[in-house]
Amino acid sequence: MLLHDFKRELNAYLSARPGLGVSTLDDIIAFNAASDGAQAYDQDLLIDSAGTTVDQDQLSRATNLRTAHRQLIEGLLQQNSLDALIDWSEVSFKAVGAIAGYPGITVPVGLNNEGLPKGLYFLSTAWDEAKLLSYAYALEQVLLAALSTSISTTVPRED
Image 1: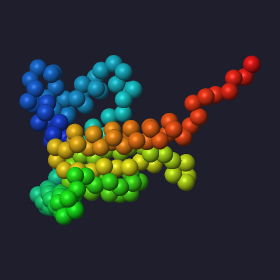
Image 2 (image 1 turned 180 degrees about the vertical axis):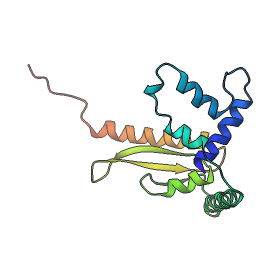
Image 3 (image 1 turned 90 degrees about the vertical axis):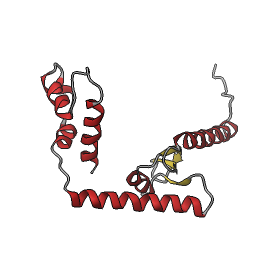
């Protein structure tokens, strides 16, 4: 569905903006192929997207899945009087938000046991981007304050 949605939404966006010189995804692919330096950019994703078709059964299943994910998120928020959900970024809960089409943001908080980045993922409902950004910023400030008090700010001089 991602590739299909990308094609559909990009075509709608381009067709509403006359004078760009391109009005479809196919136009972009052709423009890139004919342009100098086209070899520097991989168009596989664009080409794959341009070739997608979705039948009514697939569209119906995707719509039902999106609705179920939205109901899950909204239910958790409402039943627990929450403004946002928070989880570790490594957990697949991000997929629930993505399928619902809802905004999410990850704040790096350190490294896991394998030395890979670890983060906290904030998720909310449609049009809550500003709220999520404020929560992420607040967490960053707390983390920065904790980091600055736990690290010595003086470095011994070596003469």
